[in-house]
Image (cartoon, helix red, strand yellow):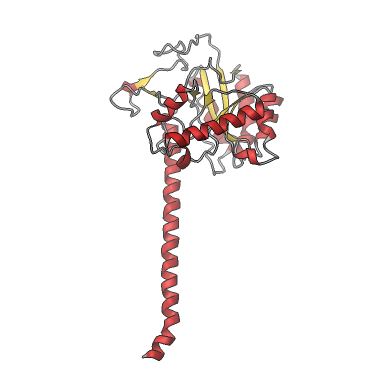
Length: 299
């Protein structure tokens, strides 16, 4: 019996190790599946609600006709029911190109494209490039080229940024200080990672909006998102059609694009987008305190 146990022992140990390994692999796959699901759900929500502002004073923040607030940026013109944007219906198509998640290896090429066409954009930057000596100068170049620079969090890590009010404020101070130290710009413009209507934050987004407003900052979302999704090789033609197929719905269009490392197709699509918009006599604008406040959810 002892001899059999001695012979069988290594086999039993190997089987146990194999079972543990299989369980571990299954757990890892499941975790990644759920993380991917959360990320995709965030993008789906952004796409679904990106053309609306939801009135938080209504009984429900679900996007329904009865609680959508008109926001002076539609093709019908005027200042909308809010009457807060001060925009006049002069028939001019105002376009705000915005880029999230940079600077990265793609940002310099995007800046070159904008400069070639003599147009400008607003860059909502993170702080992750600040440790890279090859990328750090891009913060300054964004401004020197005549573009707007704005905050998009320092770390862009949802689990950290939205974990508490203190964590949000710490991250906010870091990105604000970085931009100021690199460019001399005291920016008051912010874009929430995931947008103001994201479902990733474990705390009410109104909590973080209050922090911004207490400091005199304002957050901006978008009303055109062509779907250049993170981590995917999204087709160039789909990005172009995602912009141009929706641009006619607005007098003021804030277009969400990305300039992080994995958005080569966005770079490829940009020249044609700019040329098509110029052919439509679009006026390229920078986001500032005169820009119509386009938000997924107003807090």
